[in-house]
Image (cartoon, rainbow, N blue to C red; front, side, top):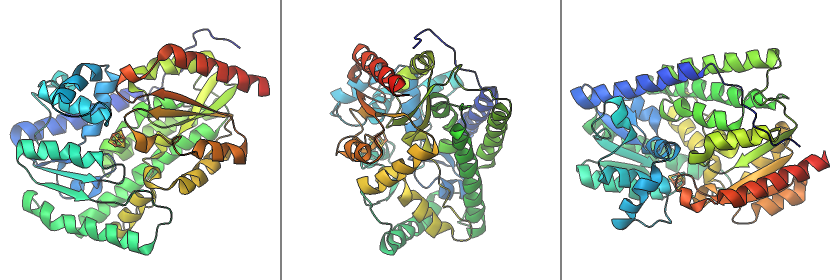
Length: 412
Ligand code: SF4
């Protein structure tokens, strides 16, 4: 097995991605400076469609947290949040984000922002975790603006009508409160159109991810983690739809011409859990050097809300946002994973146990063993974190990953 440095084939769409993201931040900056639009803060799997349909510019603090992680700045800011009473054991998106705010710094300053955009309202959904409520509450108190929440039960095994109806009603209850802040009244037809665009964007994103079923895969997890930006922050807009048409065309073209993401694909892995944002590029090279492509992941799949339906926008939003992997019971998660392992021809699984995100670490209650009993696909668990690099021992993990890949290679 080779461990030489092998470069991952660069996606040309990255230029269009950069422009799509830059334009989004320009719209947000203009709204901040001119007040031409109200600004809503939203959680990454919150009701973005409703907010976009009511004319808000929408800002996502988790995207900001990922930026802090990827730019290796989180370690500088986390201690400041800790000094203000936030535990180092809670979400490091939260601690990095609040720490940066307390230091009056943000990578957005490079894009002309003075600070993060001031919210007119904050809206969260606890479908991912409850920490987002505490996170948003800090800013609601600081800026003295309203905060709204959709409270989704965690550990959903079966999506029963009572759960769906309850969440659909909570979505509906947001409307009159949002109208008090928005410059425009709620318009059902506009909401249907935003849900339609969100559905179209999600289907394109799913097709992007599904190109990795092809052998060799034209894309890997580390690229997907970058290219998922528009589906997270522009879900429900034409901008996301336009971008994923470009990316999908490039990947389909790669398949047609047998161009693989990594130079020589011999093994195919599944990544469960959060990315290590501060190690994305080096991990990408590490796996490529071992002729291993990480072809699919729980994380990137999380933004496939293809149950959205403009015919019934409230109920379908409730279904889509309750079907989300992270909010499901381990049995429901196992069913999803079993299918993915077959669909993507997976040789091995890596579980990233992220110190500060228990909700997105799926190896804590025996799921990894139960899945292995069923499908015999070998797995490796590594300890780390999404943003707090002090939780990650690179030396230890590299040895474990290399040994794991050797074992998988010898099975082939
Ligand atoms: S799901 Fe994890 S990473 Fe996301 S906000 Fe909650 S604790 Fe943080």
